Image 1 (cartoon, rainbow, N blue to C red):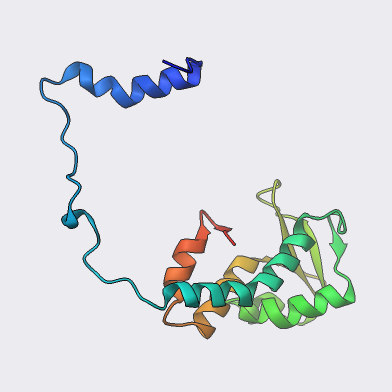
Image 2 (spheres, rainbow, N blue to C red; image 1 turned 135 degrees about the vertical axis):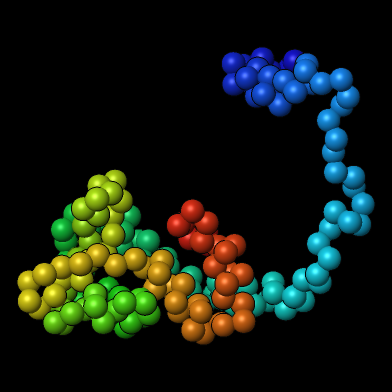
Length: 167
């Protein structure tokens, strides 16, 4: 073995351990036309995918910058400009935006999620003093479903893996 690090040895063992206990080699799927999907892929998919990415990229980039840059400390309110963008281009697309806004928006805040302290998220601070978190991923997904209904589910499935947006 070229690289005999403990990780590679374990990997090699796990990949080939079945060979020790079988009389016949393991069956593998044949490389043939039956192994390829039978449905024709959408010829416009790549073009539409690029269009959706171009459309959402500025808002996603700004939101990630708000959440992950040192510009905003935990508990900080967004600047007027950033808040306006969040209020107009993100929050209205949340599936429960009316519930999130409640009595009205006092401000938008960045803070740690109360149950998942390692992650930062956006909060609506209401005029009645309450505050509630909202997922910008849900907002972006609903925006995509609204604007690109025929390609939305495929795009979401391919670009929102494990609750992370892959742009």
